[in-house]
Image 1 (cartoon, helix red, strand yellow):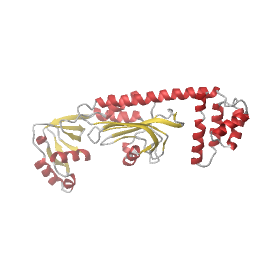
Image 2 (cartoon, rainbow, N blue to C red):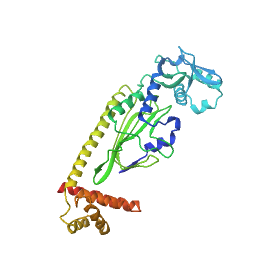
Image 3 (cartoon, rainbow, N blue to C red):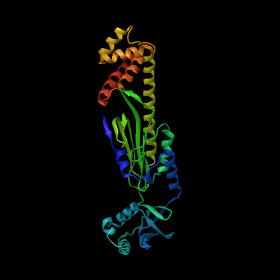
Image 4 (cartoon, rainbow, N blue to C red):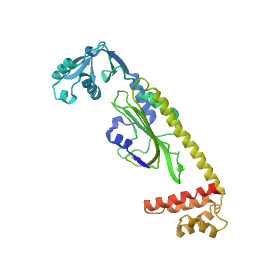
Length: 343
């Protein structure tokens, strides 16, 4: 088992303006960004750096001057082949002259993503955009049972979208099943960037606990997929759909199996009388002081069925003061359910 810290890293780099409370809210935000964004194709030598109110802007062929985000400014520096740190030390007019003298000439256009009066990204011809809204539409279609985890103590929700990228952390809070005697639930991370900051990606897993700083503890069956923003990036949506559908199908199969075990446990007696049940529980490491109290509780719940005894013992372990001791006995109690399969 491993601990996953990807959501924790996202938590500490996101501000309130990048945080969303529901997938629907995030989808609406991304849908509007797509609606008001436009791709502009233009030869690099026609990009005219200029100044507006002391700020560096770029004049496009069919528009007035447009501003730059921190990310598109970084990309423009790369296109010009000059250091961003160096340009940041120039005064605005010197920066304008530096770009005028270093932006390349060529026959291949550059791709500019504009939203309103701002350039969000600068790309070459090989870049293929996948909109965040498209990805969220896939999630809402195939992962309707999944929700964000509990809100972090910083206010982070696991649903983020900023200037450079988007990130979602979703779990199925009702999908708990048993794997090798321990309880796990399914979840996944998914991420994308409309502006080339990161690849399209997905990581699915089964976990035991998520703490309030969004570290995923004791994860198993971790599967990761990523796709660069090239001509076939849209095929990545199909892969993400396939991976999440596989996660959901495994959840349903395991949950059905677990439900069958519980049904069997409700009808299977662990012994014919208290002495026989006590001996059987002792064989599985249950302490005698627990056994005595559990027998009394189970007697009032319909007899010495495996389900009644597991339920009684679980109630008793919850009274223990130390988490480590409680976890040890919860594991032993949970393993009693396997006796229903052998019956």
